[in-house]
Length: 216
Image 1 (cartoon, one colour):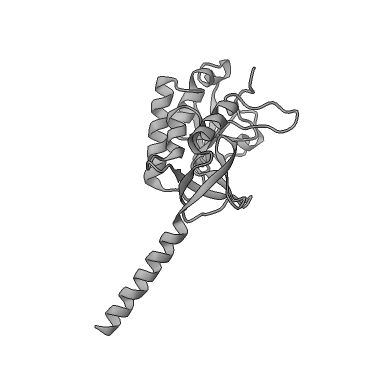
Image 2 (cartoon, rainbow, N blue to C red):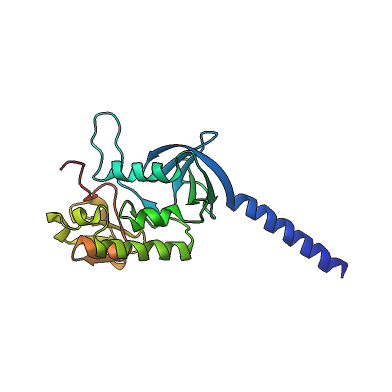
């Protein structure tokens, strides 16, 4: 009986410790782009499982819809306390905290941005399967309804081109991309168009992304 109590006590301590690591609250003091928050204490949080159009620096032009995504994230989180859910991979290679972000209402910001066509599903590393499934589901709905950037992205001339997917990395490439040309035959998936690639839950390679620049 004594041994059972000790085991139970250790389990409770582990649960409390895990909860404190994987769920916490913090205040947003800055929004740097459509998928990145700056918290009090200068902690940088990258919204997990999604990617928004890139905001460029200096004289480079933003990607299409980058400003809209940034402004919406500001509207949702700026100056507010949000809840962070971390996972087994708490940081990316740049040292940014990877998290699913929740509003005080309980709404998942990552899912909301994808649902409104302001960000797309970005599978990477160890992710929550249930949340990933929801993100992909709302993306498919946003694509069908042409929400946010989808009307422009899926209406581009190059959206009808064939793309090469890598089933291991879940990235897709143009045929001219060096990374795409190196995909092993066993991992190679061919998509007839951009719609098909995004619908199946693949994300564009950053080196050969077909995403247009703002004002193109």
